[in-house]
Image 1 (cartoon, rainbow, N blue to C red):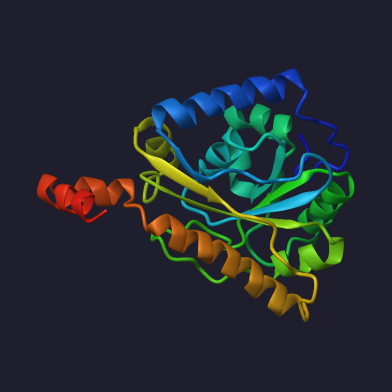
Image 2 (cartoon, rainbow, N blue to C red):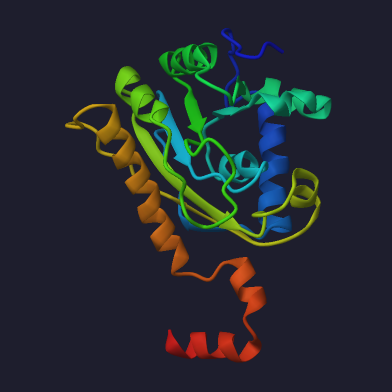
Length: 234
C-alpha cells in the first residue's frame, strides 16, 4: 500500500468492502449498541466530504457502518505501523496524513479522491478529543471544501469509546451514538476562515442535539433514582 494512493479504484460493490462493512456494522450495532439520532444523508453518487469530531481510533468504523457510500478516511500516518490494519486501509483507500506540519502529499491525494467522485472522511480537530467539546477545526477543511467545491456533510459521534486506547476501545463493550447532518451551506462563504467556521458550527449543532440524550458514561454515573427522575421529566 502506498501512503497516499493515487490510483484507488475501490467501490461499494467490491466484495472486500462489503465484507468489511458487514463486520463493522455488526460490531457497531451488536457490540456497541450504536444509536443513530439522525441518519446519514450523503449523496448516492458523486464527491462529498464527511466531517466529524474525533473521539477514538475506531471512529471510522462507527461512521462507515451507517453510511452506504465507501468513505476514504484521512488518518494519522502512525496507524500504518499496525500491519494487521493494512488490508482494511487498502480496502477503503485510506489517505495517511503526517500530523506535524502541512502534509501537501495527503492534501493532493484528498483532492484527487474528490475529483474521482469519492467520499472523503475528515477529522478536522486534528487529534482525539476526550471531552464532548469540540477543538478548533483546522483551516485545511475550509480550504479543501472551497477548492474542490465538494459538498460537506457533518456528523457528531459520542459514546463509551472516549478516553480509551485503541485495544481497549475495540475490545471493551459500550454504547455509542451518531448524529449525521444535512449539507453545510458554503455558497456565500467569505474565504477559508468563514467556511471552516460554518463547518464547525454544523458539527457543533449536532453536538448540542446529541447532548440532549445522556451519554453512556452519564448513564453509568447516574443512579437508578436519577434515571427514574429523568424519565419522569420527559
